[in-house]
Image 1 (tube, helix red, strand yellow):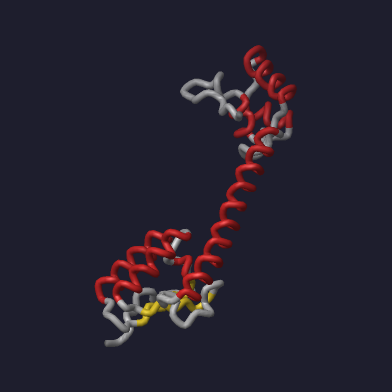
Image 2 (cartoon, helix red, strand yellow):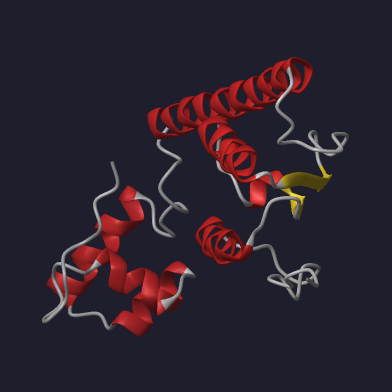
Length: 179
């Protein structure tokens, strides 16, 4: 039986996990004992340690050889081999990978918390600081100055002035509140 060509454009775009799972389901229906399931990277098919073990168990149960072309697990002739050495190495390598992933997630959460504490997480700073925003609002309300004139006077865009005046303009939502 010729190999199933389930990923035709492997060099062009990385598959999403969902798409890779759909392709794996397609392969799973056509796999027979002794077939070789070759993936370019195991993490195209598996998100975490549990997924890796599930794919290995599936291959072992059906007698399918699992071969990975690149990445940490590419040195194995058969990643689904049912021997103690392969099990140990797979467990260590995937556990280290999962640990690195968890550390990265923790650092991301810490970085977001630090940025929020400094008030610089939610997008760019407003073009008008608080003092200039109050000047724009006062000139608009009390003097009836146009948005274009206010934008020219403060060297900002009309959109920046509209943002500062959002709750004063008809049919406009209130200003965005950044926390």
